[in-house]
Length: 141
Image (cartoon, rainbow, N blue to C red; front, side, top):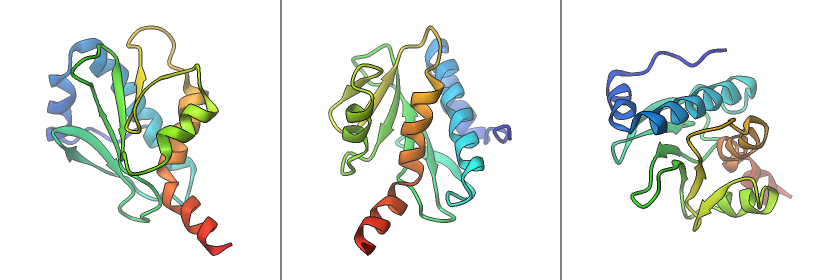
C-alpha cells in the first residue's frame, strides 16, 4: 500500500522543513503507513499536526503511541519524536544501540543522506504503533 495523499496542512508542514529533512521525513511517513497497513491491529491512522509537526495517531484502535516527524533545533538530522513518558526510545536504544542517534527519551535521529535503515526503523515504528497493545498484554498476564 502506498501512503495516502498528504492533507493540505500536513503538506505545508513538510514544505516548511529544509529540503533534505523534508525528503527524509516523507520517506519515514511512507514507512509508517506501510507498517500500519501490514498490521491489522493498528487500524487506520490519523494524520494531523501536533506542535505544527506531522503526527500519526492510531485513533481507530488506540493501539499505539503518537509518532511525530520533525527536527530538533540543535541538529541537522531528521527527527522522529515519541511521547517521552513511554519506554519506546529506551527500547530502540536497547535493540539498536549503534544504528541511530537518540535524544533523551523522546527522539530518534536520522541522517538526511544515505540509505534509510528500513528494517531497523520498521521495528522501531512498529513498536510505537503497537505500544499500547504490548502494554495491555503485559498487564493481562
